[in-house]
Image (cartoon, rainbow, N blue to C red; front, side, top):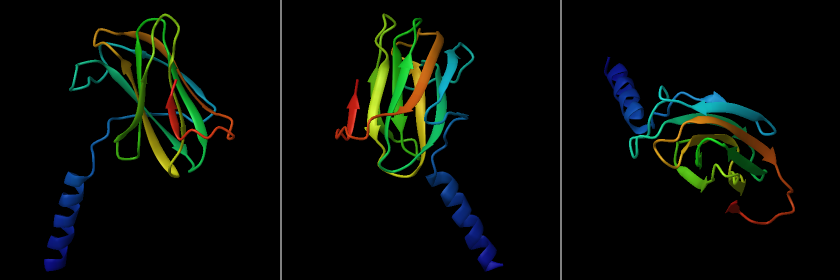
Length: 144
């Protein structure tokens, strides 16, 4: 009986310690996803802007580029670790400059990407791409 109490307490503590990450879509390295920010999307608590959430699996040492482009809003791209902690972010413009992150992945496992507008009024279609880049590049991480 006492052992069950300890297990239940441990599960409760784990539930409190683990971050609550939003529902997400999957994207793979080498893939392109088309999406849209709408009034029905979840909203960031910080500024009220709608966002979409993606996850992908990467390997330690892989050099990737994540790119967000939209002609409808100024994109804000955030790469996060498995726990939802920000690793890097980048902003783009609807005038043609995409939000872009180039990074050598630090661990093998799940990563998260948040797509939102730089301004809370931003809505509309976007394209999200992840691709492998030249492994000869030595930069640990860069925003482009």
